[in-house]
Image (cartoon, rainbow, N blue to C red; front, side, top):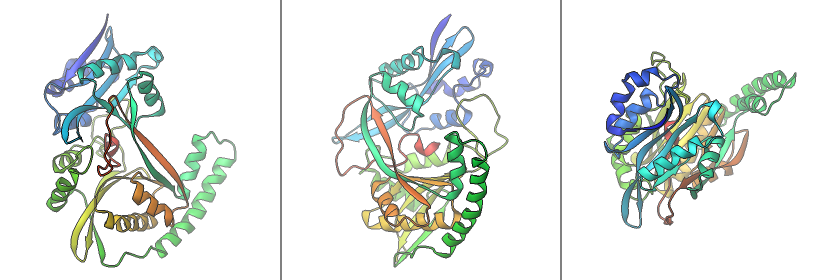
Length: 361
């Protein structure tokens, strides 16, 4: 027998503790994501957050959706962020992912948005004909030498070239790292910085003020939720089960950088590091502090040298690219947000790097 099972937000906690959940060979949601969904400040108990296609006793496909809010034309409304989507290998190409997407489309009143999907997942979503581009980030991806052996491996490089590339990257990377540490960029006059593990009350107050000028309106409630209920854990004691998306990393952190001018806090931004990848997420700053934020990112990366860095904020990525050192190579990088409904974006409303589930992963 085939059936589509819906799980509402108010049922999610009981579901992940149920016999049905325990019996599934592939789990449709991790404990961390379930906990995050339950505490989403924009969620409501009646929201349908999990769709499962079951054949007999086998999970064939699933989709998860969580509530977001949107500000446009002086009104605020809720919608569904499309998140995890999976189909069992034997059933791929049969339209099951799109079928569940259409179920969510109806349940969420034709208001869905997605970003940060894998190429295959994005293709499946777009094949439904439901989505149109809403906004495209135009940022950068910057690399250090340590990233290149992995890039070559992904491109199928074989034979002696890969070990040679690893040796060269190690030797040249050590030299490049020494230069980066000895040649730190010059700090803008009057600016100092403070790194925090979570946003403090001063940051949260700033976020509430600036969130009014952003499309997705992430303020203090959303930031406290994101930092308190991450999707990725570095705790090795978290149960290991068959969930198709990553929920554990030995190297994961989410940090806040406060920017101060003449000892007065003027703004802050958030970045993450995971297994050699540094990503910027939210910038709660005025334009006068963009140069200071770009300086801190360049100085931090010169000292610590992650494998690569992704910055989607257009002005800050432009500043970093203009003064590219200490990076070895910098290229343009974009990411598109898609929606099932049309809306006009105001020039004075910002879309943040970390909007959607990008900050969680």
